[in-house]
Length: 206
Figure 1: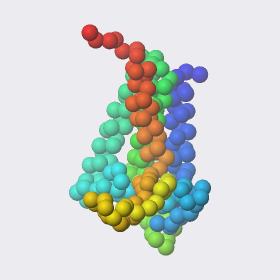
Figure 2: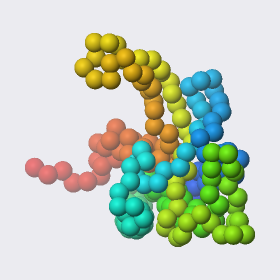
Figure 3: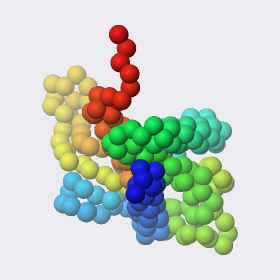
Figure 4: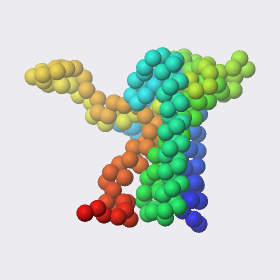
């Protein structure tokens, strides 16, 4: 099996897992609902992300459109680079790392591009419907990214002598994310950790 085929199967597998979980959460959980997967430190907690990482937004619908278009161009660039790496016959480690980043980026683009069209709106007491008769909750490229993975491993309170947030509650790890985000993070981390091995094929400069 060629490196291109293995990369394609790897990307396809990530997308299937990511989208299957998102669709299940969207159609079986109300917004803000959560339940335990493993104890109190691994939860499924349904939220939707309107913008960039950690829910940041800018410039309303126009900003959302700009962000979605930027993501499409970024994914196209990553895809081109991945094809180039495969043609250059680089290590499997680098190919799978870039494939993971590519798959994660595509996974979140699918949400932004199509979820507003194919789903009804989720609510705190309302399940979303796939392909509703009245149409989706938004337009093409204006969908919201579905997040659900939550790992509040440590909970406690800042000590009273802390210079900020004294006495207030802290949670580690607070962000809620999805499998696509995880795929991107793992791909980037692998490149940073193994960069010397991955890029050893490049000619050294004096």
